[in-house]
Length: 205
Image 1 (cartoon, rainbow, N blue to C red):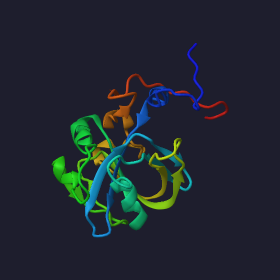
Image 2: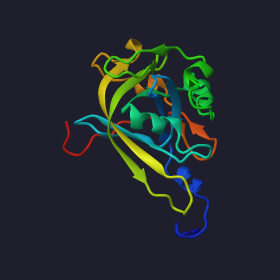
Image 3: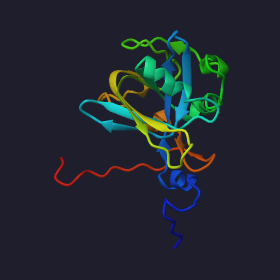
Image 4: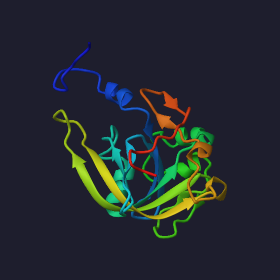
């Protein structure tokens, strides 16, 4: 069996393919002047129910001190996690491109904004759901090699939830299957939901 220590030379992206599929946080933020930014991050997940919290990680930038999303939440500590669906996959991909600071990825992808209700950050109007969040903590992650740009983990508390009416079930649950999320695997490979099944915890009704 192949085995490498992380102290040895190995392809770091192999970890991405092993920890998969990964949900995509389609994160919108604003800069100090209110200019919007939108970018997908595949290091993203829900981390707490009570209080409701999500987190995403931003890798180091190759062309600037840090990516716009991270720079933005440092000065305006709010963001919206927009649902990345199969229907909007091309727009998600467009917003992953490296754009000059101040360029709106909403405009690049032809996406209509909707205002946040509790935060001053716009959300993707066409998204199946949006989570308005306030930043709780930013954790700078040390680089693995000298000279590498640092990454950072951004933790946010969900303060408002938007869901398209057609995706709410009769018992007020979000219909994840119908919403059709896209997920990141290794390299340029993505995934859709396949077969789903239910399995109750021991002792639950």
